[in-house]
Amino acid sequence: MPSRLPLVVVFAVLVSGQAAAQTPAKVVKIGIGGPLTTTSAGFGVEMRQAVELAVDEYNGAGGLDGTRVIAVAIDDKADAEVGTVVAKSFCDDPAVLGVVGHVNSGVAIATGKVYADCGLAMITPMASNPKVTESGFSTTFRLTNRDDRKGPGLARYLIQKVGKKRALVVDDGTAYGVGLADQFVAGFSSGGTVVDRKSVKVGDQNFTEFVKAWPKDFDVVFFAGIREGALILKEMRAQGLTQLFSCGDGCWDTKAFILPAEGAATKGEGVRVLSAAPALGAVPGSAEFAARYAAKYGPINNYAASSYDSARVLIAAIEKASKSRKPAPTRADVVAALKGLTFQGIAYAKPVQWTEKGDNTSAVIFVNVVEGDRFKPIDQISD
Image 1 (cartoon, helix red, strand yellow):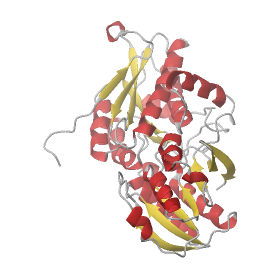
Image 2 (image 1 turned 90 degrees about the vertical axis):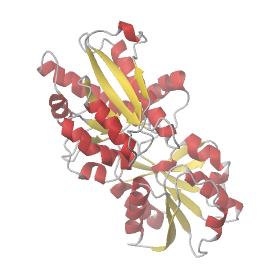
Image 3 (image 1 turned 60 degrees about the vertical axis):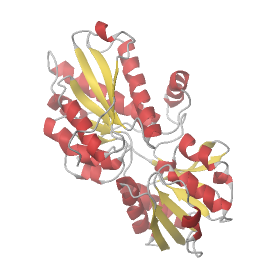
Image 4 (image 1 turned 90 degrees about the horizontal axis):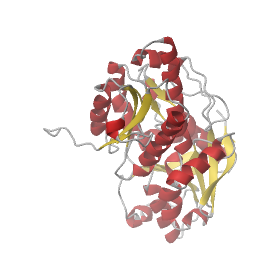
């Protein structure tokens, strides 16, 4: 462990557009903890932007009885150690009443105890390893679905609906990747055969020799990871391998998967990629949100709707707690309000409600193919 704490980059966003010197004395802060740099930055930056938009719109509609809501984003660099420093910085600021984040499961797991110790609510829009909510921390909430539903669900789909029997499984060595791959293996082994299990490292670029060493007797590849998926798929097709490529929602990213795959996603048997939410436009209000987001930040890649809803759920809890506790709610009030909240968002068709562990009962899973430069959902996976 280094002798000095890691440097983190802080983005304080006063979303009303006023300068910092004009900030009113009464403020409530929402922390945003996620990777704003590193190879996971696509997820973190989109999360930050969606939260900013939610806060901006809330303030524009009148805000919290004269109290301005401010979003404060800190780069956790997709690193568990840095993430705990970020979490402590949010805990140390009494104006922070909740956090949207973290993106990476390993970081979300590592920060759970930090937030629990200071009583600060954390809502992750996308960290999916079961341990995120299985650690027993009453301050942790998850909007997306869990890997122990995603992995076995996709495995059953590939066996029962696509007819696949022999899977080659690859993970990226992260808590997300290893956990999802483990769950997929457990699900696939009940009706098929896992011919081999391999691992790559985050940041690897050249997969020529890696793919050459694969066994020949498989009919589907399952990759559990993020950015390396596109490069592995591209190398598969370059070596003449036509088998189906499947991936968890780490590949559900236009910029990080479809574009770097350079057409490989539509070659051979194509791909099956999980998404943690329905297509934008399927849920009332989601198309309008996408238009507002795109006008400000550009096209949506993946988890913007879930991040937007996470922020709005947190704001709704703060507002509910504020009405019952004057002049200002405590963090405990916000957590209590969250637990009892029912909120209709735009990411899922059913209202957000939490299980005792903090999982969202309305979370669903979809299977996508790639058509041109976009994902197209073709099926929904039920538990």
